[in-house]
Length: 251
Image (cartoon, rainbow, N blue to C red; front, side, top):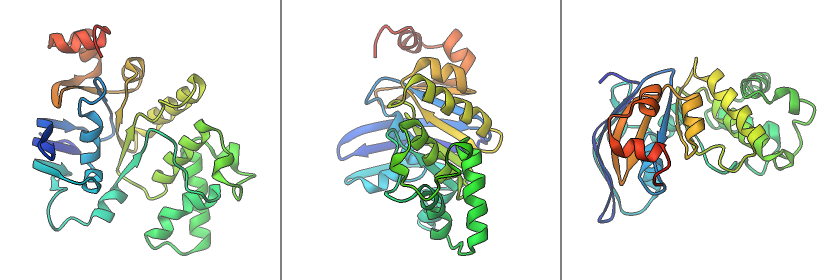
């Protein structure tokens, strides 16, 4: 395997509960990888392994290897703050900070040492343009982020991640709380972003996975049942369980 992100024999336990079971996968750079499967199957847990968000949960134990560009994410020498700069995350529910639109975007660059006002202004504009939000908010940057619609807030959260120039963007069901129009805008944005970022998205929406992703992984009961090109997974799955899930026979 030689992907941007890799897992080898990855096992994760919540106390005695075996949540991820021997996961082997390689996620390619500058592609969109979708993770699908029923609720509680392990896909969000797997996603959080890539920026060590599971570290924040009590009684979690991880075995095996998770790597970014060949480097072990869980090595003792890993700087977790730097890792989370390289691997950004967007959550299911939009979670803007209780700050202005401008300060939401400026927060990350300031945290990582950028102090020059002109440089921060450039980052804010570039990030909002990258998230297809600039034209909608350029005249109200000092207003509260909470004044934005749900779809705009989610794009703001994506812009906030982009502001620290990550290499990887993780998205955990980013459209589940959005209407179809807002969902379409997010999907368009992801397709534009993949030329620069490695994107991994957890989704329950089979149509979304088939529309936007290059590769798809199907999880079931903590196992990665099948992983490969999205067209193959949806049109000619190799495992009957994958076919059953995609056809809506369970889940």
